[in-house]
Image (cartoon, rainbow, N blue to C red; front, top):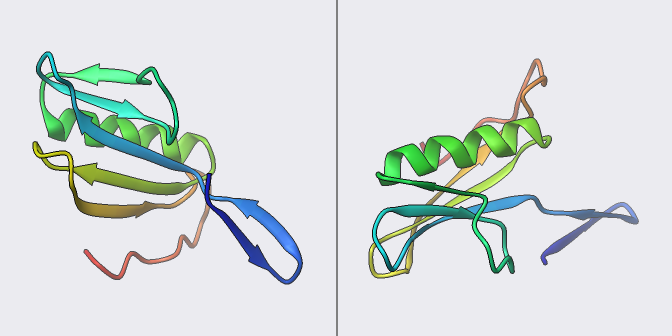
Length: 91
């Protein structure tokens, strides 16, 4: 698990990874988890679900993997109830 320290406060980063499933389709997984949070037919469906989970959990990072398993993109997700969320500078 990755931790950030800011002004003496430790904060655990919230991430969900969209990874290919060996039997087909795409899984949403938390880092270090042996089981997936959800399974989807398409990568875009899995990405949308990962972002829903993160928004409900207070925001975090959606990490998207390609078919080869390598990270191809990531997207910062703001908390679902934040009126002025931080802007994602990559998209």
